[in-house]
Length: 256
Ligand SMILES: NC(=O)c1ccc[n+]([C@@H]2O[C@H](COP(=O)([O-])OP(=O)(O)OC[C@H]3O[C@@H](n4cnc5c(N)ncnc54)[C@H](OP(=O)(O)O)[C@@H]3O)[C@@H](O)[C@H]2O)c1
Image (cartoon, rainbow, N blue to C red; front, side):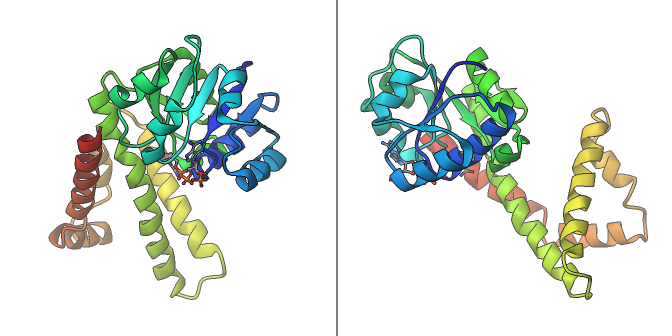
């Protein structure tokens, strides 16, 4: 990726993206919005980026633009900028649909993306809609890109970005619980995280095996995995995760 990238909105997500982009592409020119001066200065000094004099200056200097403001600010931020037809705006604003973004981005093209904070370590599975070569080339620097055929599919799958966050809560509780046994400092954390990584790695390494079958091979009758699984099922431990996904999806679908 040789062209300049502009970033409108220099909050949490922008920080993760700048870190990952810089690691993957040491020569990539990154231009930051000056709106949050302290944050822009921090990112510029840590990762090597230029701070523009205005959002218009960001847009004037870059072909691809990452829109990483909060959802409620996204359309207003676009309206304040004059774009060129040759530009591509990649909006990360959750719940703001293309119908709302496109008029404000015109005549530039606009796509939606849902990167995760693990973009900082180039490990983000990033949803994209619609597929777009320029957006894909940029986002592939921070992980794998998964384009959806429809915006509806993008919205539903976007709920998994919240699931990603909930996993930290679950893992944290498991670490806390494991520490009670008096393990050496850091061991419970490593054990729990490597265990979760092992689950994901095995599932990814065996794409033709159903996850339910991988579980079934562990959950032998009378064994500890089955014992705990039955408690989780009885207490809606699994169902409550689906209820949370349903709630997030309903909200995302309502706002677009
Ligand atoms: N955080 C994540 O991991 C994550 C993951 C996927 C998607 N997202 C999406 O990414 C977006 C940003 O999330 P975040 O957590 O990074 O939010 P955040 O930390 O609040 O950052 C948003 C930034 O946008 C700035 N901003 C607001 N209006 C602006 C404007 N007109 N021009 C330039 N900058 C402007 C804000 O500046 P002020 O502080 O001055 O208001 C703030 O620095 C959200 O839409 C969210 O849905 C986030």
